[in-house]
Image (tube, rainbow, N blue to C red; front, side, top):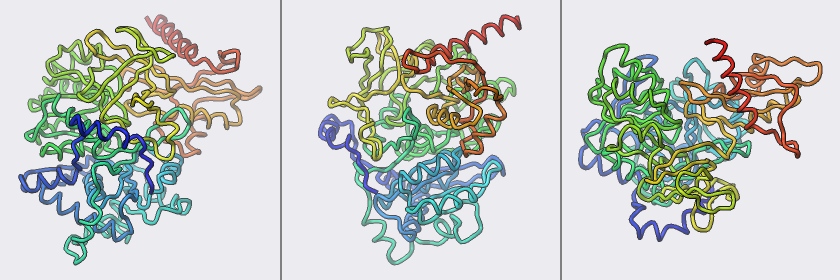
Length: 554
């Protein structure tokens, strides 16, 4: 694969001169841990469904990374080849990334909620050479899905199955044979190690174009974010990071996979979110830090309060993905005894703004934090003029961690000649430099930290034989932040209900989390003179309906 990371070269000299790019890769970090603390526990990976846990010291982590790296090379994977990984938070995910890094391959993390529709686009667009997936997870047959897709993907040479027993199993092809002891292993592991500007991660993000965009990151852009992030949170080698957020998201990947190794710390992975299991893991492993979206914080605080089981080792819970309700911050502080940190970020940059550990709790309630070192933000009007404190406008950022660009779509990079990146969000910045996200210029709904690609779902609904017009808008949800509502104008003489819409989208192989959970039927849509649907009026309609329902209930 040829990566067109056009945003990296123009800013390299300045980033190095300012000390914002660290000129290290994850290989350097792992090798340093092996040399300094070879027997320290590096990784504990729990599988909730069977109660198993797999542990690795740093020495064992390095050896297995080398083994899988040579195994991947046996499958034809080399420098700049893409290895897609659709795994939960299992140890095989961490080791696959470390193995890719050993031989200069690029990992493409894929959320386990994705189904044929999303995967067929991403795997083809990214020209994945190898695809690694579970045999089954949470009752779904991934092996059948992925092998069914393979004939349509000419670049995909090999499907590798975790948990399978056949010749294409992860154990048979990658983790079982002692590949690292082969005569050619040393040459394989030395000849293609990537540099800090080589692309190391290709991660897809939903946007407004109707198709996902492939975000390209190098070691320099990723580490430029993780280093100041850890410093602001006071994290170091003595910390234990619990990660239940999917590692196929930037949250899990950067701060649950990469960061512990960069710090020489320990990571604890949880593959299925269960607050009781999380409490047990925090106490058993003495976890001190975790990061997740608001529903995780709500679940954990509620379960701790109801069970009476405390989590004294947990120092910081960083919450991102949606504003944190004030009542939840207060409840979580009482129940967990941990500092609740508010943050905002995106796949293209990692975390951009964080509150500080010495900020009062009101900052986490009222703001999404202030920029990390190496990050500048500004709010501008529609003409690009900077707005004063407190006014809402388009949020731009200029960051050392800004991505290398969107794969094969440089026209969508959204970064001007002065390196200002248009986030697609609306925000205001207060007089102290703290930001509050106020809305989105991009048409995306964030459900429990997961972006719903609105344009794509709407396009599918227009194919429904009984639908004349359709729009997807957000409505508030106490636990998930937002859910998706389909506003539909049926064709004359036709009837539409939510089950039929759900069945239709399932037949299109859409991820379940993307399917609308509410339906509003209308005879007409509010629209501009040019015919564009006015979604702000639809959102106002939903709010009015909810207010009426609340008044009736009262």
